[in-house]
Structures are given as C-alpha cells and as structure tokens.
Image (cartoon, rainbow, N blue to C red):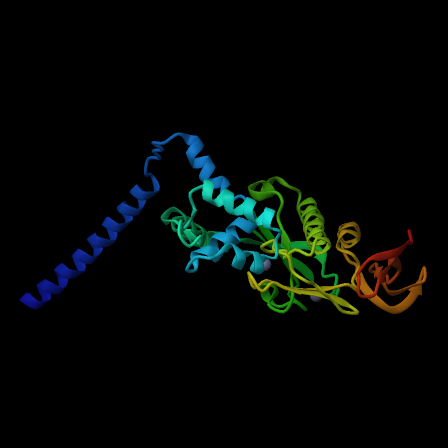
Length: 306
Ligand SMILES: [Zn+2]
Ligand SMILES: [Zn+2]
C-alpha cells in the first residue's frame, strides 16, 4: 500500500469517527439535564409576555429597528388603552424596553432570543400526519378527502379537485385539541375543528379584526365574498358567502358522508337579497337550504328537509 492510499484510508476512518462523535453529541444534547436556577414564577412571567397573538406581532414589529407608540397605534389601529396594555405585558416580561430619551420601544436581548425560539418552532409546526377520511369532497363529490393533521391545525383537501395537500384549495382549520387529537374519534375531531374555526372566523369578522394577528382591519364586502387583507402581518382571506355556513356543513357532512353543495342563485327572502344554496345527499335530494344575504353573509332563513 502506497503512502497516498494509506492516507486516504485514514481519512475515511476519521470521517466515520466524526460521524459517530456527532451522533453521541446529539444524544447528549437530547438528554441534557434540565436545570432551572431561578424562581419558576420568573420563567412563567416571561412566557405571559407572549400569551396573545397581538404581543407576538408587537414583538416582531418592534424587533425591526424599534417603534414609537404612535407608529404602533397607526399600524395596529388598536385603542391606546389596548395597545398600552399589550406593550406593558411585553415590558413586564422583559422582552421589550423603552428608550428613556426618545421614548422609542426596542427589543431586548431576551426578546430577540424569544423570536429565535419562535422561528425554530417553524420546522416542528410544519409537521403533520396525513389521513384519508371516510368523507367525500363536498365540492366535487368525486373523491374521499384527506386531512393533514397537526396538533395545531388541520388541512382538509381533495385529491380530485383541490390538488395534493390543497395546492389549489383547502379548508384550513385550527385544531382545538392539541396533542389530545389522537384520542378523539376522527369524525368528532373534524366536526369540532370546523365548529371552532367557524366561530373564530366569525368573531374576527364581527369585530373587524385580522384572523391571524388580531389588529383592526377593514373587510371588503362583495356580492359573493368577503375579502380581508392585513397590511401589518400580510394575512389574506377571501371567504365565499354563497356557500352553506361551515357549522351546518360540518353537521350534514358527517351525517351523510357524501353531500354536495349547490348554489341555486339569487332570490328575495324576507325582503332581503339572498343567495339560495342547498346541500344535496348522494341521491341528489335536497337536505338543507340556506338563504344567505348578499354582501353581508348573514343567514336570513333556513329550510330543513328530512
Ligand atoms: Zn373535490
Ligand atoms: Zn394580521
């Protein structure tokens, strides 16, 4: 064996050893003993600082070169009292401080560390399990739907008309059960998640709040949809209002497993201009009809056919 060959062989050995060492290092990291040297209430208080979507948003906004109160007021369109309350929570938690001379809010090192932690969570939060449901797509009625389930959200998608993992369209829901979703019956999980998300969306619309970050935004009301765009966090939403309301959809969908929605057109109902929309079972029989007011999306009337 030449010297060159021997060197190559040794290099390969070293590489193998390095991989082994890294494996051991990773394992040690995983098993690192948890040592909390300060009173636990201190850790809990820091976490309280971020216990609201608006505070997460504020920390992110302030991290970008600092912000003045007036600026934040304009961006978020919150009342002074509400904004003050949330900034104060961030200050008490030690995540934000106020520059004594200029009055500008700035992020602290601790705040910066927390933003890093949140960003590190992105990978974990992107993980989900995919399950095929015993429920047919309510748009096309052609295929069984799939659910991408994470402890935090559920994405319902149709392989026939919605694209893989909902690349064309999906129904994005919040999962109210967290890790406990595994102990839930899948029908209950889907139904409760739809109900929960429907309520959250409804509340945000009623209060003119961004569904994502919670700041005040103006929704635009079109004939068949309500559109919202948040300039602060960038969240966009477009809600079809000529669809059956989600709470009723959940109920009928789970009950019949194969239902189809049919927009029958515009009619006058109780003196109001409405969308007439029905749910049909697999035999094509109408099971439910809703009259939904054009532009507002309010349910004016409902007919049930059993
Ligand atoms: Zn479909
Ligand atoms: Zn927003």
